[in-house]
Length: 257
Image (cartoon, rainbow, N blue to C red; front, side):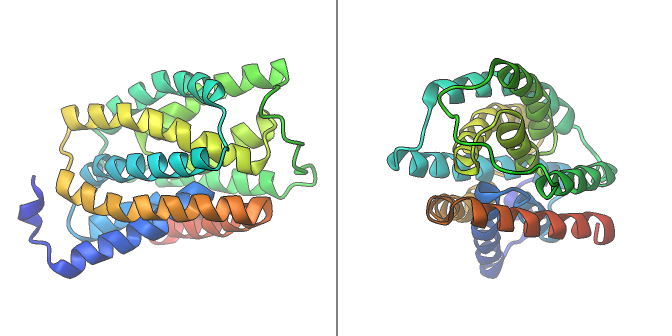
């Protein structure tokens, strides 16, 4: 399958870029932006598994842009980011290998359940944000964080949708980072495993590079906007955006799939 066979018109490309801007900003600030971009490709006639792989192009660009924005603002911890990314890689490789042959949408019920659990955890009575600890991590928290990162990498490689809702609780609640630092780490980790996953998808299934590049233009801009809003809005804005994104995603999965 190629992009030309879809017979796309100019407004289709504009719609892809617009969806990418919204999805990219939501992805960086919370997660769930792929629930906008992937359905948009399906609406244009792209089969679900191919849309799943093609979406990785935009995800990669979006997170590289956001990571660069955070880096220029002095928000980074490269050594920690590399360690966390290395833990996510094995799971991402396995997940991408399985996801490249994925068919159907049976996974939506599981994904919706994950979203509800994350929402409950966010608003539980014990949800107070720990103090920033991005340089010193409790050894127990570190071990659990690294272990869970393998599982998170699998989900990211497998389906990607909702990955932010999985990474953020691991980094924020398990490892004890504040939400801004959590987003900084999240975009680096996602960019790292997505690069590997994209290679696997391109080898095992169709990836529409022109379509993905068009979507990436929007996602890249959205990633920049999301990173800037994270730096200026702080934790309160992130929590609000995350809550709204989760609710929209659950409704979309359960009632409009």
